[in-house]
Length: 534
Image 1 (cartoon, rainbow, N blue to C red):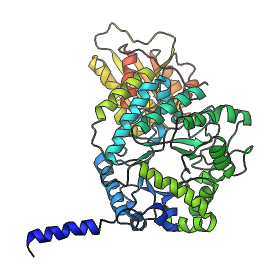
Image 2: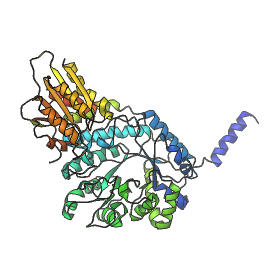
Image 3: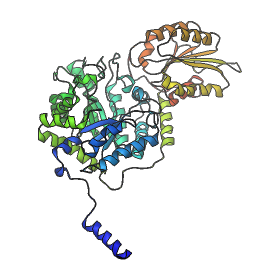
Image 4: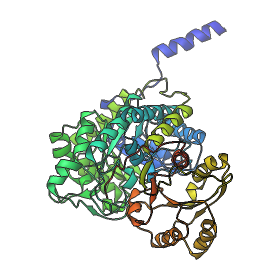
């Protein structure tokens, strides 16, 4: 056979025997439909545990877990996962999700993505347009990597200072600011082609328990619930948010079941009363607050109650599929699975051309992150007019002591740089979050003869760290020219009534550290407003 005849035969084969495409929804088996409703967790070290299930077509999506690896490694992981999906009988691509919400939930160098500002910092700036633009830019970065869903924003109204898990993940205690900033993030992500998921429905801001550890119960009144906590979700739905995530919380005046398992909350309230037609995601079913040790049974109860996606963590999908088959009506399975299938079509995942871009966004992101941070850092107190700091000395001495986890050490170096550029003599170090006597001895030597002292306090929410408070109290007695930096949760400010000069940063990153230094030296003016009340 000559080459021309061979090429003609090849062409005819492609015409009459086209490449196998994805199955239509009606062609899916029941197990494949249930598989569309299941999201598993994966990172570069454990993805292989789901390889066989993905190749069987029994997984709908993957939540990429945090990890200190590069952007290239993240992209390689996602390509590998999608490669396995292409080998499945149904050829349906995976939805790739990420928890990218900033603050305490995100640490530096995670997945190679840029360090994200906390929601509370964003709220302190309260700039809708800049926030929307920054998240549009972030969406482009997601598309560069093949990420389709972001479990953000948190729209919980944090009116309870003792809430141990929300803190700076929230925009604050004002429902209007929470709603406005939530809408800015939703629009930024979704205009950029990424699904936004508002959480934690119907509100996690009035609890004093961490649902990762145990059962949480809503502490407020029914009136407070409807007037305050439900309000941002109503606004998000009006803004056409595509996803909402459940809370593992019990609301006694609504139902004795956790919201994640409650048809009263997910179906009657969210779908029927509020008119939400998007996709409902359970929160992670491996959390202790989900109450069930059997993740597969939890998945079945959540789907039956009205959720469309069950986050089954590291559970094998086959086990969850069996539990759902036994407990959930086929009509409910069809409804949930069809939503996922249609979302994949809407996102153009069935196209032969991958929906991946190569936009260069790092510089644009940094521009808006710094701009928002400049608008956010808050001068809470300045009783002695220590800010802006003025001195006649040619080489003033600065001591900076930060009580912070080691993972933030690199970010804090950005605080020192502006002082060095202005010819300060700088001594600084990062003490332990829960300091010992040796930390005090070192700090005492540092602060005693300095012209200016900066002390960085850090607590995650309203939980005081006694050893840290004791040492900071003692350090205040040694030098009157002391600035207190509230590095994370601004609820720690009330621990130090003796502090006459206080700046709130709402999170440690290179932007907040740099801006704080610039404000102290008078190079920037503090513009932010506290988005909480004490």
